Image (cartoon, rainbow, N blue to C red; front, side, top):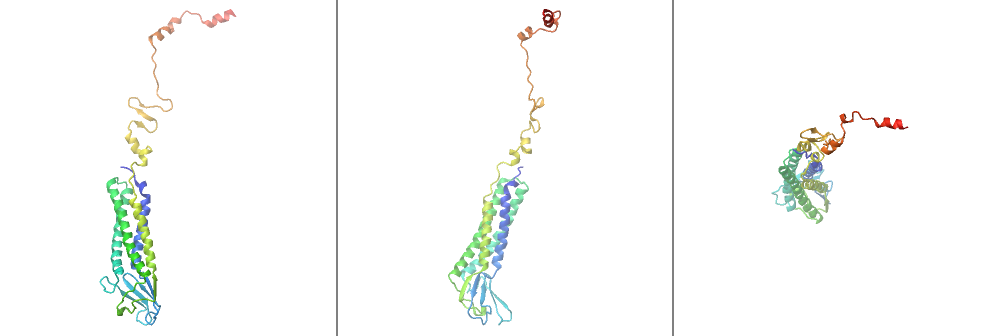
Length: 275
């Protein structure tokens, strides 16, 4: 089993970014200020501002029983513009895809950090998590961009009379929820690209650096004294192997033995006498 946890540190960062992006996606979907309407008539809307979101529209009023008044916008309402209806569907799909992406990424990271060496399965998990993150970001970007273009084009919404709002404001601008959504989309895209770029390591560092796998792969190698001799044990790395030399018969014949030198004078005595 190979140790592959070192190869997925960047993907762990991608998981964190994807989780934050998913939380911000749901936060943006729940905010009311996708569009900020400015109204000239303040007889009902005391603050002169109305917040139009994907799911409801809210404003402050001193003339009504409740200071903050909100009206829900349903997906089947006839007055709802297509960008709001589409955004309701898209943000729900984005939330579900983001949850699936986080679960898939968590399983992929768990298999890698616990050294489950299954390259095919891990590769599919990382690619699936990356695609789900990218799909989440794409759904959110479509909803955000469509509403952004409607605000910039000055699109109107024909609210029914019970909403106590005019069909067209005096002016309107982009709300903070769209900025939060774009930031969440960026985090999701980064996390998705990081997961899609994951590559399973071909060889673990322990094998290339002489780790346990390398020793196991070379049973005749002693990690302390070098390679083993299967007959005589490990070799000495300091002195090397001993070589045995056999004298030839001619050399042995010319070399005098100790018995043959008996009775001969020592040459040193003759040198002393000559002096």
